[in-house]
Image (spheres, rainbow, N blue to C red):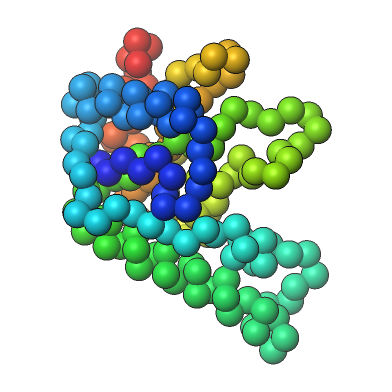
Length: 169
């Protein structure tokens, strides 16, 4: 499995990264994954503009105007899919923090989206799961996101099955 603290674009909090990285190491120690350093670090394009364009209310993708508006979003998705395919030619899994920082309050996320590390895979359709990684100093949970290649839900579920049964993890 390859580890990426930021997918090449996000700016996660160092404590969140440390907790998620610790969970990745525990997965390796439990024999669920083998951590490897990819030949080239993963550098995805920030999917935020693409996600927001594709999810904008009132956009009818069948119209010519929408096609022009959505072309940049489709390019980001295609570029990120290519980069992920290159990564998955080596390690079978990708491990990242689930969110870039602690949960936001009831007032909302503010300037940073809590989805910064997950929506790349919502956009691309790669199977992903979040498992508990630990707790921050504030007592809030931190997650470890595990991402698999397209169509490899079996690998993802097999990887976490034994570990999640072990309450010590």
